[in-house]
Image 1: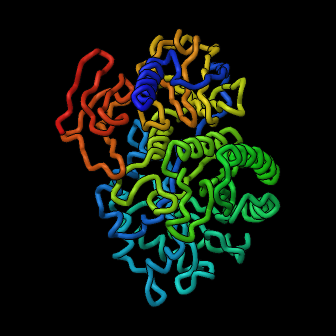
Image 2: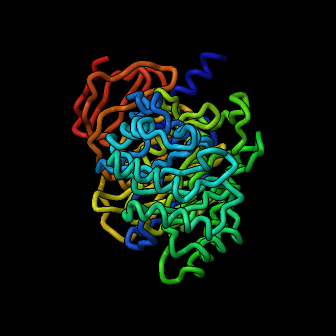
Image 3: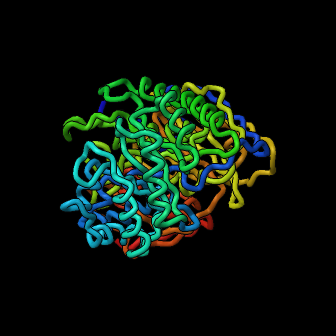
Length: 486
């Protein structure tokens, strides 16, 4: 019996990699209709960002593995990055003593991140002397002076405060004006509100708009609840997307002459964090990857300009360890930042309750993400219009067995249908990216040394144990076999 089940699993994986048959499970259909000529909106270059809960600590940012893991998640093909928000409850207190900023500590913490080319946004969460207060205008201005004028770190994006009921539009404007008096080139936004409270955020935007470069809020899929079923979590994200659309409309009404960007700059399954034992186990798995992908698509689809997951390496939430060892969801951010920037085009799924789609085009090529948010495999068939598409596409897949690159499908294969595994994220693209192999599995210390440069989307690779663990060899598009040095 065990041998038979093992054989079935092996055969199922082979068929799945070929894109023609599914593992021994039922397959339902979804038709994906894409009009590559119908542009809906431009994806903000800072979209698909992250939060750093440890990015203010020199002993963390001084770890090359930490910076490498962050860079892998947020860097795009051109070397730029999505938005990296620095926030921690207690950031202001940890950067200060006796009511004054510690300039050397701040510079030491930020320099490795700036040198890595990360686009930073600093959230001044509270006052210097008390976590329950809002930073004063003079203290906020002093921090801008230390970071941008004295240390020359040129941090462009700033946020005030984080989840403080005491904030008012008038108080916010005083702080923002004081900060911009020191460096007029910066952008300042807020209020980092607790949840998507439409009446409060709308009134805040109306009253603060003269000094408001963006408006920000937080919303988690199921709030502080725990152990919600997968489908409830997925459904909640899509309902939050509808709420974002309503917020976008209200903000546009109070600011008709200037579009105020919206930042959904904290999200995850739940905000519950009391102890490591409270971790939702899905955060580190393919289901966590589905959650993150659904959030990012919901944000773009409904008018939020930027989204930031909470967070990078806290034990309860992180997509990696603080040494830079990656969990599966890290690859979702990598793939979105590599391939899903550009102009979003019209893309529809005939079965959106199970398969969610987003498609973009850019000067570099065409890309689509297919999110199977169901517990069953689905066969997705494409109907394309609006352009002459390349013959061969590249496929990246995050699913139960890890992050893999099944053989490149042809356009005919996409039209006939490819299998999307249960609880999976599949990215199809014609965009080649030259990059080294940065894959690290948490708990696995193997490294590819030296790194191998190849077309990351340009073929498929095999490992002896679940995708990229113990990598044996790679085949690129030219059929060349590359054996890494271990």
